Length: 255
Image (cartoon, rainbow, N blue to C red; front, side, top):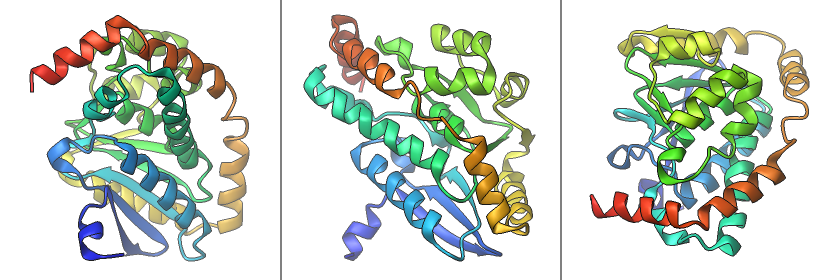
């Protein structure tokens, strides 16, 4: 892979020892927003690390002031509500998140800063979630005439229906302590200690039987793919509405 391509990568992977990989979303100027390349790379590294004999746990975090601000609005504008293009895009999105769930090694989400829309959905896909004190969670999809397609499938299992309705229907932003009460965040740390504590937890997991951890994760995450097809269809149809198109145009025009 040439240097130019490497410099344009959406994820950076560092071996921090003891079988632990630190995966960092490295698109800080765009708040680690998710575009087509982002989803392709997510699928790529979860597959590769799941097959690596020396990888036993992963910590996933973001560079800069965001974990991820969610879907790249420029990508939404490019789709222009065309359902025939939206459906395959949504399938790629769901497949990428599902790759986190089904990655053979545990993935610890270390949520730093903004986790909006797809950022909160990505956290839902992780096996364990810890957060920094400045973390912010929100399902912003409702503000652009959509629903969190993956989130409405996964969040009720993680947080329950009441918390899912609250977040998905209001678009409100909540902090890590609220998400602890909701059941998504396990622990909250000072921002400067977040990655260190997440890596320590990953090392703890990596010290146990590889087979026991992998089989345990696989069994806990069984049946996680159910409901995706229906959510893809419902979300795709929402893309093909004036409410969504108008909201995206207004967002883009604000620059």
